[in-house]
Amino acid sequence: MLQSRPSPLSELTRKLETHFRLTDEERQAIAALPHTLRELGPDQDMGREGDQPSQCCLVVEGYAHRHKTCSTGKRQIFSVHLPGEIPDLQSLHLHTLDHTLSTLSRAKVAFIPHQAIRNLCASYPRLCHALWRETLVDGAIFREWMMGIGRRGAVSRVAHFVCELVERMVAIGRSDRRTCAFPMTQAELADALGLSAVHINRTLQELRRTGLIRLSGATLTVLDWPGLMQAGEFDPAYLHQDKSSRQPALA
Amino acid sequence: MLQSRPSPLSELTRKLETHFRLTDEERQAIAALPHTLRELGPDQDMGREGDQPSQCCLVVEGYAHRHKTCSTGKRQIFSVHLPGEIPDLQSLHLHTLDHTLSTLSRAKVAFIPHQAIRNLCASYPRLCHALWRETLVDGAIFREWMMGIGRRGAVSRVAHFVCELVERMVAIGRSDRRTCAFPMTQAELADALGLSAVHINRTLQELRRTGLIRLSGATLTVLDWPGLMQAGEFDPAYLHQDKSSRQPALA
DNA sequence: CGGACAATTGATCTACCTCAAAATTGGTGG
DNA sequence: CCACCAATTTTGAGGTAGATCAATTGTCCG
Image (tube, rainbow over all chains, first blue to last red; front, side, top):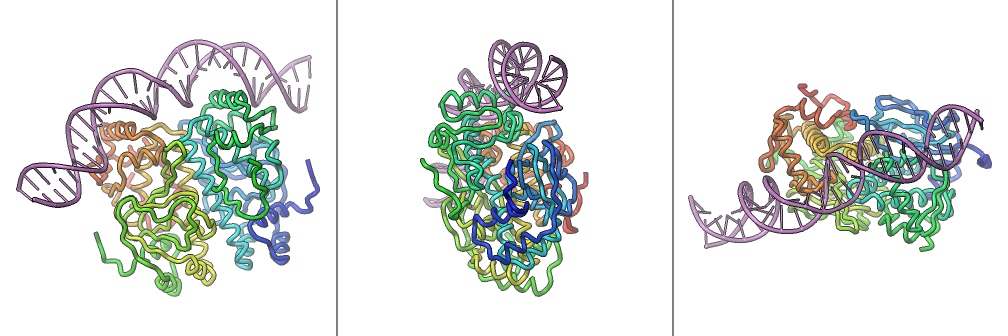
């Protein structure tokens, strides 16, 4: 789509920069991280449950997701990851993967050795804390999903998910809160929200019927942001995007 | 119950020590952390959604939980915390609380200033990583709960919860995997597992009827550990207790 | 232009919810 | 030690959101 970005790692720089301004030295240290860039097709595994990886994956372009299938064959998707995120940063300290990490769509991914990240942390405490922080936001999103799956009805759950996706896309400059790429199928959405694919389909129809969104192919259009936020009981506080970078919602 | 432990902070030492052996210096640094000890009654808030705390809470004795109530009045409990844990460690980097932290039972809690922990991290990188790691295990538990709430039936969900509780109690030396304190009411269990209190009650009866557990008052007895694990599809890998400290299950 | 995958529809079923009342428990003060 | 209160647990009887199964239609891509 776009190849205007100088280095794959600049996605990471940009991400960390949303919380505080990096020094030139820090920026250079990130740019100097050794890495291997790979292009992956849709639904390719980057790490499987039980693996003991020695590197982390930075999503550079496209989307990733983490998930697990239980013995009854049902699958739960735990998270969706956008460019600039490192979905398996936890593997730096938890040596065995307790779930699987895969692409969602086609994606460009940079593999960075654990040791390089450890060195970075040792030399640049602020970067260490910034990475730690990223994993904490991850946790906050888990909690919010738990709330949705456990306590919200289907319409609210889907609306909330859409709000979160849009908000996060806006934060990385890939949405204007009006249109945004929608990287998953209805079956995947079902696995993320703890619903059946059939019910997701009917719920999406409901959201369209009430004029909140449009969804054609892989493109989502938000027709009524305030209405969507309300339907999803969405309060972006849990995303902890508390710096400049973000433009407030029009609502 | 027992006051044999020298300092409230020794609970933290012991917790961190389950992953690697601390040096004397590290142990002393932890013991020297400034803190305020407080005794709290059941269901007391230690931090509320929207707060910007300047200290962390170490659970010394008793139990805590994190939760949030959505606009429809339904409540979701995100986690339960045992002695030695710091439920709001994330507040070190996420400055606004996105949920509420409360006691479950009566509890003894040590409040430790953020700054003291930051200093500790700066001086002792290994401790910094150990704390980071704790927050990552937290995240792993969130994922597992998500899986339960989203994809498992009621019996499996409750059984899984019980397995996790027992396993974590064993890890801190408060259960022999046969008997253990059960710190929550059925209504709280319901809020943790995304079910109604009535359904929790019937599900517990089912677990008793099938001879897996006994539950009288606040004491849980596991009658059939392998059976319980199977009912809950429980695999403790996600708890990442990968050091000596633990005795393997008899099963 | 065909083939595979994704979305949609219809019909039936069930796991779990809600409401409401009764029974039990545990803690407290007399 | 007992009686009492409040909080839990338990029971019963419907009701419903969402699951499941099985086609059918639509869409994208090679």
